[in-house]
Length: 112
Image (cartoon, rainbow, N blue to C red):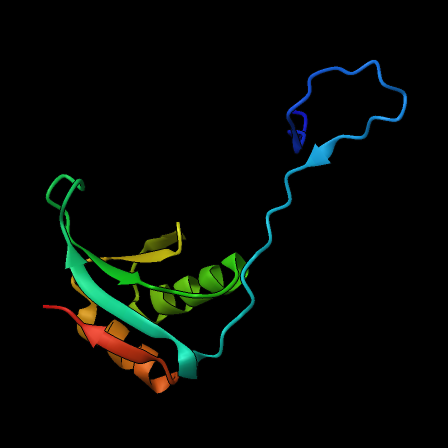
């Protein structure tokens, strides 16, 4: 499978001085946990009745999000995923997740 090109706008140009403009996606800088304001809630919508604990409002790089998601999954002893700047943990793990995030220094709003 070939890597997709990050070119926009022009398919072909006969101009010898033409250069492609590339899409540049910059990742967000890692913000310390003391400045994070995370929301922890329970979600059932669109999941065939299965409940998941949802962590929202994460600010930082995707690598930091995935690392935090892995730490939370290990702490809760369950599965989950980290995508679209949200972390999903299987089951009702709100209390465990909120306690863990507060110990790391984040400001947590627990939504019942």
